[in-house]
Amino acid sequence: MKIERPAYMQQLIGSKDNGLIKIVTGLRRVGKSYLLKTLFKDYLLKEGVGKDHILIIDLEDRKQKAFKDPDYLLDWVDEQMADDGQYYVIIDEVQKVEEFVDMLGSLAVKDHADVYVTGSNSHFLSSDVATEFRGRGDEIHVWPLTFKEYMTAYEGDVYEGWQEYYTFGGLPKILSIQGDDKKATYLRNLYRTVYLSDIYERHDIENKAEFEELVRILASSVGSPVNPTNLSNTFKTVKQLKNITDKTIETYLGYLEDAFLIEKSERYDIKGKKYIGTTPKYYFKDMGIRNAILSFRQTEENHLMENIIYNEMRYRRFLVDVGNVNIRVRNEKGELQRVTLEVDFVCNLGSRKYYLQSAYRLPDEEKMKQEKRSLIQISDSFKKIVIVGERMKLQRDEQGIVLMGIYEFLADEKLLDA
Image (cartoon, rainbow, N blue to C red; front, side):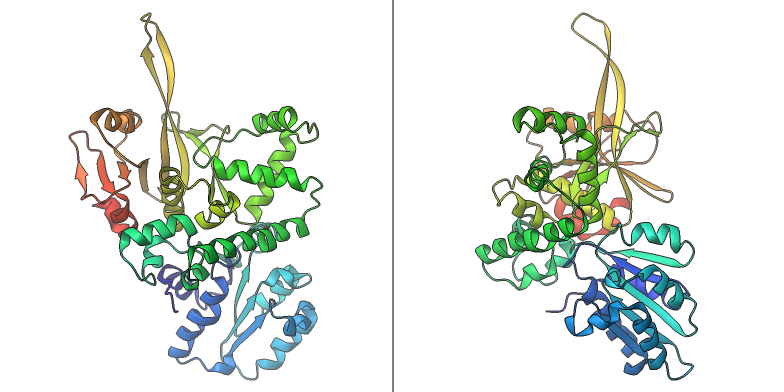
């Protein structure tokens, strides 16, 4: 089964031969290796690059464990580069190479070598790119399959595909597994034997049971504000664990972010034009893993739809924040009272900005007013959009607010500008 990833291929092709190290990051099993070793390799071959000028080192392959020695790896590359032609060096899971930062530094200054690497841990890669490779590294982050990508390989209609997608997620392997039980088993095993094992291997976590309980709490509260102090108090009162402090919770959240399991969306004061720094939200990179953490017991479509919209906008390379709008209203006594309204997502990419609300259903006028209330309070001219969990032709009301269906939103990136 061949699944095209055109957005990432466009980034790779645009970065080709630019003198920078292309660093492909993302959750394990998300398709980084396939992107480089199959799709990009095929592109290079079609462009006339000889097979002997494409050097692939796979650190996941035990037979290539000798390449974990940086000097061995560099010597091997030197031996393979037999002429002055351009060589394309692809290293899969580069963080497994000892002193990989120094090794990449050596490759970066090598003539006729265009270097591409993959990695699954943001602590080992993204932070190093920011410090060690400033001006020399080009990061390309890979997400699980979008719904549009998923449907290119799914055999069924859009409604069945949507149910499968929000239940089992967008890891490419899911599309080749037959049967709900087998898909669920694959995801549960992946979470425990790969993702959790990776985190435990990298970090000295004494309270593993409490760490996993925190992950379950996050999974069950998608779209809800997260307060480390409140979580710490819960552990102290319910679990009788006084050493699980708010700082410990923040550290654990960082581990989950480093492993690309979750991502934090900061809270932004729209009228004050500033970040608030309190009660962010966390979204899961893949719905299947999120559901597997909860043993597929909480698959409420409204919460999952919100998470999928977040992931879609991040895939489209937008910065996505949670918006706050502060207004004053009169209470029953006639007194002015400050009220904070929420905008699900404030999305920014260069000069483009959108305010998005996720509304699973709009059964009546009252619910419609509730979803639009925060958007109406925003005085700037950027587009305000309500995304509804059904098929719907684009509509625009007298206040300039746009309504569109989730299927249309996910299928057409240009619809936001329609």
